Image (tube, rainbow, N blue to C red; front, side):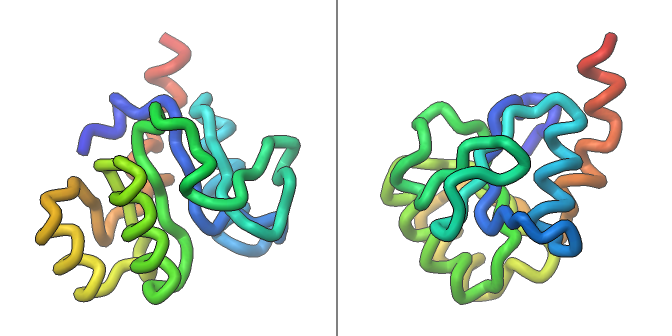
Length: 130
């Protein structure tokens, strides 16, 4: 997956808690100029951004869905995402599992494991300002 092509990113597991990666990643991506769509059934908004209750509510033109949830939750949400027609799924370190990998490979979905979205987009801010 080419992160330079990402503009609109959904974040499953977005959080209001500043100590959680779901919040750290959200603020990081927003600061780099991405349009971030938080997904968490417990909130209406996070960091002033409208929060979606589920994958099914997301607009269909999301470039990638980033997961920062435990693998058991991630597997269920990945199934919903693929069923809804999303093709690019990014699992933060710790959010992936062999079961998720097997599921995604069976369906031919494009996915990323073991890479941090914050690290991979670290040059994005400079890219956007040029």
